[in-house]
Length: 427
Image 1 (spheres, rainbow, N blue to C red):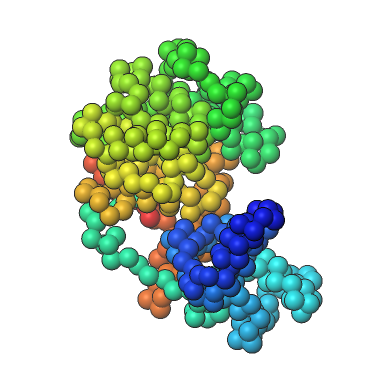
Image 2: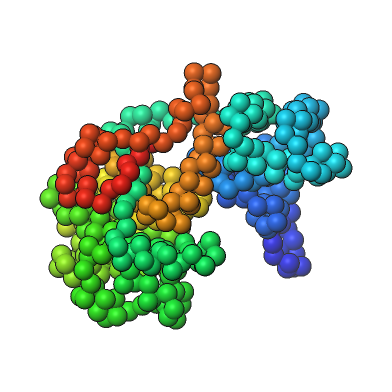
């Protein structure tokens, strides 16, 4: 669709894509959410009026993205009288300077920003609830929520968020990060929260595995050999969890946004457990080709020797099945909570034979805890918009703090995993 070729074959192909389909069904339908991308613009040009979007994570970062997708299915539905009446009602609830004027001139950005601001930051719960009801009324004929029965038939999902107390060395490094911008804090923090000895790698090596900036096994092994693991709270939690998985014959799936923490944990497992790559340990990142990806997934799911699978959350968060694992460790906090939900869905899906336990690690009293709170607000918007019903109270979707000694998970109820836990929350 984006090819500028003028040959008859190119022109005929584009013509067929635009005019021949009588129905368009988009799986992972949250993907075409940005209005300035070729993907959304191309799909909007397909002339059939019959379009279906399928997505378990429709809301990603901003309400504008949801409306971009809905507009793809039902073009110009915001211009219908019924939609405009609801939009005016929303605008009347909370005022942002200039927003009403922009709405009258046909610009919807002000409406989207107003809704997002109200749902994210307004402390008046009744006003939030009213806006949610307005959204549901506006979108009820085009947006349908269905809770899949197949998930109810699975053995179950237990989803924990664990706030961990940093070591004294880590606390000192966190204080030095105060002057960094938000995204730098997140990337550097991903190493510091894992283990403070890793901070030195940020100047020379790419956290995301950029070509030419990868760290070799020898360099990482040198770091692994000289550290005290207990100085790194997430490293210590990972090793403890790995030991418990091994003793109970369960497989562990580990996700991170960044390559360097994954590499560190991989070499920890190699050095301290004596395991080897592609036998007990499997790694898939954005650089993995399709053959390696398929072989790793198949071997991990089916081999009795397999112990742990390390995956970059964006490379492995969609499109694969990792039902061989029953424990999931998410070592950092992606700012888009739907990325985490998609990642959990790699294991909690049809074909899973065991109850799945998820451990989302958050460094307590650090910038990462702020990111965690942002994600919680985004999750609440999605749940209240799509899943709310008359029987729900305003606290039904909130995280619940639970006693780590009586949390219902034999792993967390063991002293081995409890030592660094500050707060335990459960979805």
